[in-house]
Amino acid sequence: MLSLQEVSDRFEIQDLIARYSQLLDRMAWDEMGALFTEDCVLDYTATGATAGTWPEQREFIVNAFKGFKGTQHHMGLPIIQLSGETATARTICFNPMVVNDQKVFYVGLWYDDQLVRTTDGWKFARRTEELSYFDGL
View 1 (cartoon, rainbow, N blue to C red):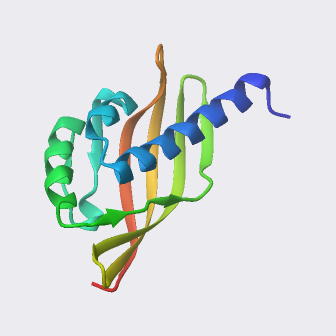
View 2 (cartoon, rainbow, N blue to C red):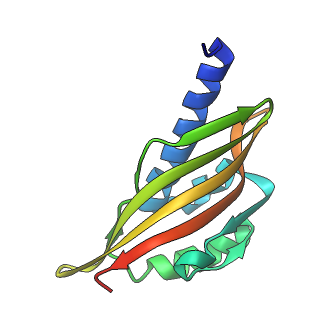
View 3 (tube, rainbow, N blue to C red):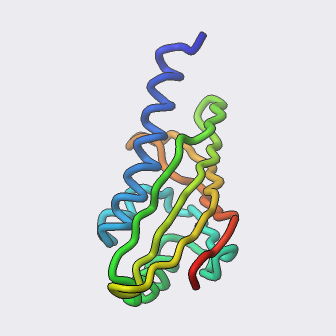
């Protein structure tokens, strides 16, 4: 049986993952930095992007997203493994990317996360993408 702390941790981590996709799709770049530890590495090389800290990724993502009319990162329920002040999570993501009114391409991937509890709540310490497919490119 899960303790109250474990239940709370799981909900907080699920909320962190959901906030990430909402902020990304709203292109709320200024709000996203709060989701990551200062030394967090975001490795998106599996989908053709870069790897780096949030400030480094931000520049790449802002420029890349200029080519899209909209995105939707649909996140599945994560599989979370808690270990005290750290955790891992694996979450499936289905991501339609709107290029123009008549062209949408789709990305299927998993996010593999390393998370850490901070005084400000759970944050991403590392986020890695694993590509499943591209469709409609």
